[in-house]
Length: 453
Image (cartoon, rainbow, N blue to C red; front, side, top):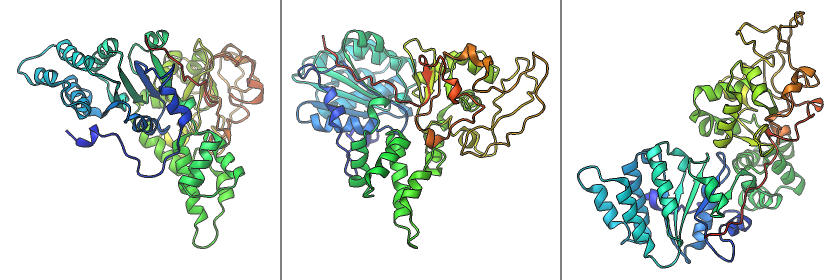
């Protein structure tokens, strides 16, 4: 086993102190939650925050850290590594559980977990078991084992977890019992003050307040976006020929910047199945989305289910209401960069024309997103038949049935580019979109104040 999997990460550089977040892990007079969940898309600083919190608490509690990878998506491997992680904090814990795992034959999982939980129960003082990158686990047996562990943990033990996607664990039950602390993307976004510390103190840019505010607004506080912007800004500031123009770079910085695109392709899109990438591409012209509107754009019938899948996977969409009728995308989302990143070429685009149910070709095409190289916005003669499809326009009454659905309202409109006036998202398309899902604006914070029973 790789030894570094069991070590709390040490920062390689100065970090921005985020007490407003780390303080929420200890609530109600210092009580510990049963589960501390840090869930957000790639690049939001989940691992960094979890490590910051546990490093600060290491003198007050035992910390067992396990950095997960795809090899841990096997029950026996996962349990073996879990016990090894706990033994770095308390060597006597899990000795019998490990012996059961190493014994010949198939030892029931419950027996291993019962032995481990009994050992944890006799420990004095708090213990935190941290599972980093839990989204790599796709084995139902591992999820069942973690559920059993969560249900049976002694009160002095907390399970902490970072993940890009909501895990298939009893989150609703824990939330209802007040035993769950959640830190979401909305909470992880850098504030203006945090962005100033990061850009100037950590990255050494010495930007004026107006430029800091501009980058914070354009990235919506997305940590990876700020990092990538800072690296590029630093190269502009240090141009050897004296041609550096940081202010011009900040104004031009967008979601189609090569650093941002490379990151999204490598960290987000590359891990998605073809059907998800195709869905993201075909709906990327939309700011706000409903299941019905997505079906009209794709010719499929799974629009609402796909939007719920994207939301559970933290794939840059957020609900606009509590009934999940409408969604919106978040900053620098892959869908805003779809013409460039989803198919690997900047020349491919997708029509804004709803796809006919019979799959026949459409007669019109509208431009994709401003700021990207899409096919020319040429249209043929508009169809005369009432049954023929035609391009969607913002004020067109034909989209009225979809007006209260999911939504992609870009938080970073100046970064990702707005849809053209004839695509969903123009000024006239805001009717009825106060509820549902959207792409872009910061979703509500989900920091909670649980009580551990």
